[in-house]
Image (cartoon, rainbow, N blue to C red; front, side, top):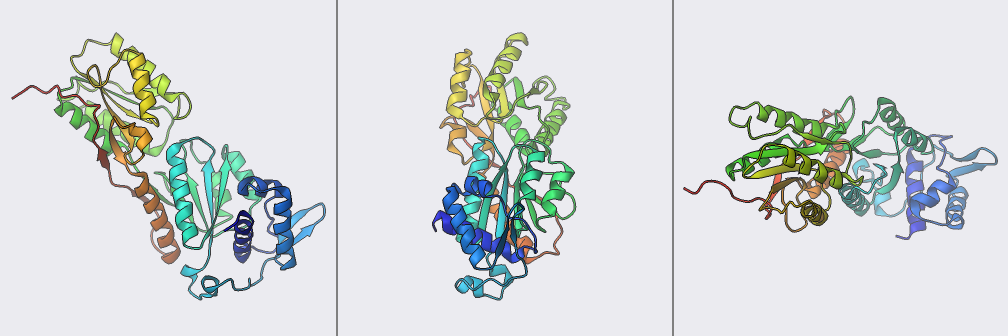
Length: 369
C-alpha cells in the first residue's frame, strides 16, 4: 500500500467513528506523520472532500462531516461482524531513541496492518504536548500508549479517553478505570539474578537502576530491599545505586562511573558483581567497563536486566534476565483484540513471564567440592 493510500485509508477509517465537526489533523501534521509532501497530502484531502467525507472551511480548518456510511472496499469492509471490520488505532509514543520501544510499536503496527486495521504513529515530547496533539485528532477505535519512564498524568489519560473507548498501555502501569496494561515487573528478575550470583560464590553484589519512578522499576527496588533484610544476604547485597539518567541519555557512562566509585571506596571484595537495569548496547557497556579497569568476568561479574531477545542489549556476551520484546508485542496485541471482543471483561495489568539468556559475564567463584 502506497503512502498516500495509507493516509486515505486512515482518514476513511476514522471517519467511520467521527462525529460531525470533529477536526482533522493539520496538513503539516499529516505531512510529518506519513512522511508525505504538502502536495500529496492536499491531493488526498481533496479526494476525501469529493467523496463527501470531509469539509474544508476557510479560516477554520478541515472537519469530518460525520454520520456517513463509507462505500464498501472489498470483503473486509463488507462484513457485518464488527470484530472483522477495519479499525483505526493510534500508537501514542514518547519521542525517544529507546530500542525496545521502537521494536514493540513497529511490530504491533505490522500485526495490526496485516489484519487490515489502520494505524497512525503519533509522537509526543511531554504530557502537555500529547494533549495538544490529541486535540487535532478525530475519534479512533483504540489507543496503544507506550509507557515511557515518566508518569502519565490523569489529564493526559482523560484527553485520550475523549478520543477512544479502548486504551491499552504498553508497559506495567498503575491502571485505573477502563484501562488495560501489559508489561513486566523487575522484582522476579532481581531475585533470580541475586540467586545466580550468590550460587556462583560472589561476596559483594551491587544493584544499579534509574532514579526515575515507574512501576516496574519500583517493584524491582522493593524486591532488592527485601532481599537485603535477609540474614544470609545482608552482608552481600549493597545499597542500590540510583542513576539520575535514563537510557539514551548518558546512562551507561554515569552507571559505570558510579560503579567504579563504590567498588574503589568500599571494602575489598574477593568476587564483586553487579545487577544492572537499562543497558541498551552491551558491546559499548563492556568497553566502558574495560576503560575503567574492570574486566568482565575476571574482575567483575555482570547480569543485565533487559529484553532477552534483543541482541544489541546482550552484545553477544552478557548474561541477561528479563522478558522478551516479542512476548510484549504478543501480549499487547492479544489484549487489544480481546478488549474489542469482550468489552465487559475486567480491566487490569497483565504481567509477562520472565526469561533468561545465558552469557559469559558471570564468573564461577564458588568453593570447589
